[in-house]
Image (tube, rainbow, N blue to C red; front, side, top):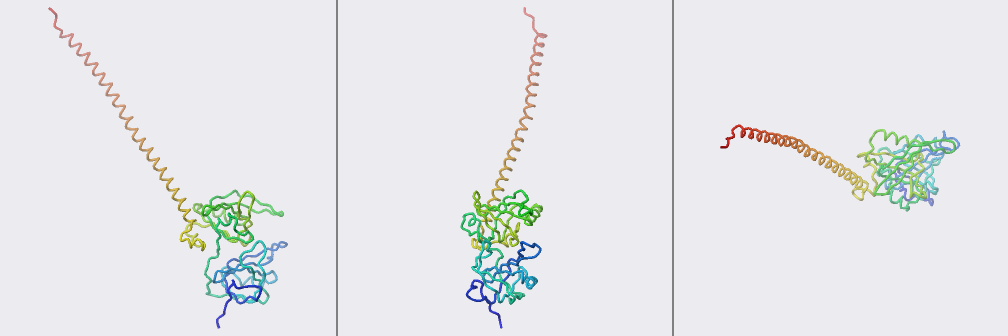
Amino acid sequence: MALTFEPISQISSSKPAGNIKARVVRLWKLSDFNRNTLPFSIEMVLMDSEGSRIHASIKKTLWYKFQSEIREGKVYSFENMGVAANGGSYKTTHHPYKLNFQFGTKCLPLCGALVSGSDFKFVPISDIVGGSYDCDYLVDVIGMLTGVGTEREYERNGSATKLNVIAMEADGYKLQCTLFGTYVDELNTFLATGETANVVVSIQLAKVKRFVYESSSLNRFHRNTRCEFLTGSEELKHRSRWEKKKGKSNLYRGRRRGQNRKNASNRSQQQKRKHTKLKQQQSKPKQQQSKPKQLQRSAHAKNTKQQRQAKSRCNREFEVPKR
């Protein structure tokens, strides 16, 4: 008998959660503040075949039971999950509820099962900068890398960590993104490759912060955040649905416009160099020709003077005496 699965969009607190077929989009461990060596809980984001998403948690009392069974990117069937309200200021999904693993929860891998859809759910930078995005929800964003700041150390609660700020742009809107810890190392590793032209940055589950003198910024990168630096065809894997509906994203049109401006600038510089070189070539023959003409004129003057002197001598020698 084939199993029937409940869509994630229909999960509510009014009834127990039924069987769910979903792919683990993101999986991370939340550290215990008192003991960093042990996880406080295991957090994940689940997505079904309809594209609906929901957050799920495994408390530390049960993590030993499920941590070896669940892997990021795999598809599972979940049964007997607890339902709770999705609150707080670090919500990973827009679903009003979240799921909690219980002792009686069953998690079975579905080999060969596919749940299509992108791991990313990109939000336009214009919505973040414009202030229409709710900062209580973590955000997925994509844009062109336009600047990299200076690495420095950030100290908090007696511990120091690396910090750097990058600048992103899409559709003419700009955004700053703060990287911490291992994300700074990933940035340095990428920059060391030398492929810094037309770089696309995709960020998943980042916290949005607004400041007085800056419209908005991506901050507070945690273990759940994913940051990727892409070049060439790799960026095609992370194009969002709203980009695909446009046929060709404004991000790529802006990239082509920048490339066209660069090519036009190169052509104008080449034309200037060619014109300067041509003028130099044209000026050289005139200088070379002027010198022989001067020599010719001086030789002609000299010859004319000698002819006059010779003629006067000839006249004196053959002068007929007057009678």
